[in-house]
Length: 181
Image (cartoon, helix red, strand yellow):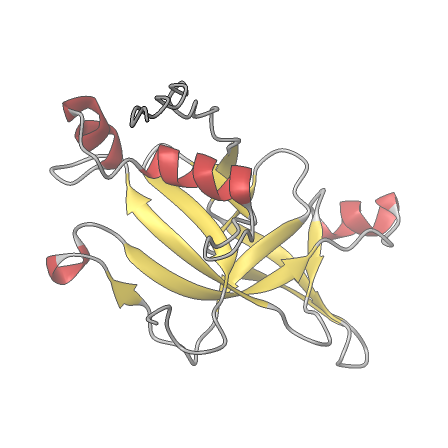
């Protein structure tokens, strides 16, 4: 009797595709509140929105405290935000009067997200750590979340944005308070 077993065929290592990321912008945007009659439009500060063809903006949720990553937040933070969808039903003349090309609106039923904001520069900056070859590569994290989505225990990423100073990973907010099992 032969006790030898066939050696399983070696598989190539998992290939990480590049993470799909878009340029983000952090500034004041025009927000339309249709719950008030007459409708109010006002400029409000948002955490981030996609710079090209924005579908939504993310405004900090005032009642939820952000979570600092690392000592005193030097490694970033997680901010809880309300999603503001883009308002498409305004005519060009109204947009010109408001002095903007894009208007977001306050939703009737708010949807919340968690945004992981990581610094790109400085001692704990993402780009510096990745260049050193750290195992905690947020670009791989984004690529994995985009590739596997909500498969079993992997959280989905809604979108990933970046600007000169920060990397923003936008994920669904956990309604259970945290992700501990």
